[in-house]
Image (cartoon, rainbow, N blue to C red; front, side, top):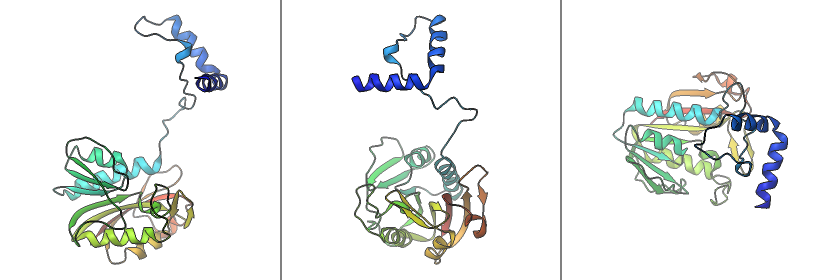
Length: 239
């Protein structure tokens, strides 16, 4: 309790405008709610000119949903992507979601299961519409309690290719720019690394999300991607 009071006090000291707004509010408040200082929960980072957002996760999820709707599968299989992706997509078609740490989501059209991406339990060539978005870069770094494996990402990629149906679509997203590992958060790949790893598949579309401000670019050049440090690369491959 004391910790909570201290935290709230610090926030108030750092945000005098909240107190000003509070007194202006209670001067004209209705009686519908209690508004007590002990219930203060000051938000000091939201008074901005524009609404901020995570460029990687807003743009790549929006791109992937549009691609699946363009592909028009009977159902879609997703491996460990953002929960916002699978849950939103399930409003339009059935989704089977698999994760190392399965999510207890209860939504119509959405099934959730546990899986190890380096050992997928599906037969060869059995999945027609598949996605793995902003996930492979984590495999083998131990961040999510998974086993340490420097080549975990390579094993995962081979599994994705193995289970994809000939003619099937794989939506694949990773951080892209200057290759390195920021342990234990993620790997960052170069454009050429991804193209080499998927050289046996056809690149249908590349959607590039620059790290800083700027509109995403369809089919950006390798040279443009190589200028980035931590951008986002969205690849639509066909087997």
